[in-house]
Length: 326
Ligand code: SAM
Image (cartoon, rainbow, N blue to C red; front, side, top):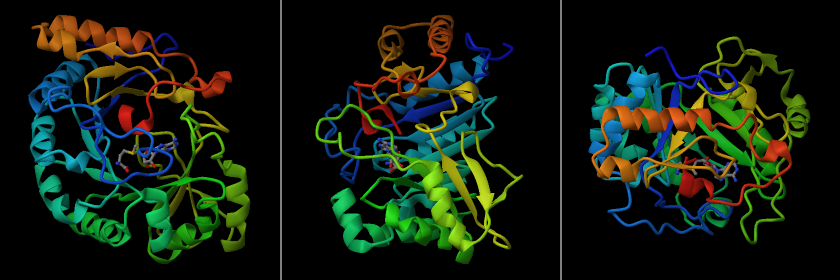
């Protein structure tokens, strides 16, 4: 096949796969209001995910990211990584995790074929970590970051969702980590999903973060932009680490969107911030052949909206990040 192109001529070569909706944190803005409720039988088995990736790779998908929920809660995730690694056409496998279990699994994952890892971390303060995530695991996350480096899961990227009044006063502390410890930090704008109780949480626009960072020096554009995604990278003068911005709210990047998402219960989602889904699990379990599955993947690609709902002035009211796969 010659690749997957949507109705707006975007090349879709990236599939983000959620392997579970369960999480070992209860972040106020993510899991707290959407406790996992899928049963073992609801979620795709590794063999089913492997089959979907094989068909998707033949159709044009080249890059895979595993996410969740917390993907490392899924037993023997390295086995799935190894299964995907063996599939022709897949040239990059990455993982998004909260890092708590990386100390245990980083090396096994690397050996299985994982290329790199993004670690979510919204605060460097122990008490605040407990407030935001409902758990006391900051030390494990920091150990997980170290383990990822030791295992060579580079570049290790640290994702901080910046929320007004919650952690926006730590932007400089994270930026200093890029300066002093070579961290690759990415500031992500909080996306307002229509979740009861969360109406007051606010995104902090990139411009505001940018202005705060000026006190550390002039940010220089980075020309070695690594990754498959929408982040735009900069660097403080003379430092190894980078500072990236992901701006789904104030400067959406739908025009360069290259991705599909597969939820843990087997729904193919054309857009994170739009509510449409195509069922793959049903047909898969009812004996669909590769041709039928390819057709469903192509249908999902053709249904990608030109812009996500926030960009169209609407609020997505379906599932949260943890349920979809962040
Ligand atoms: N458990 C893994 C982790 O923590 O990275 C993977 C799943 S988690 C849903 C993925 C990312 O989505 C996390 O960085 C989380 O902070 C982010 N996230 C969740 N809800 C969000 C929202 N409303 N806006 C922006 N980012 C969000």
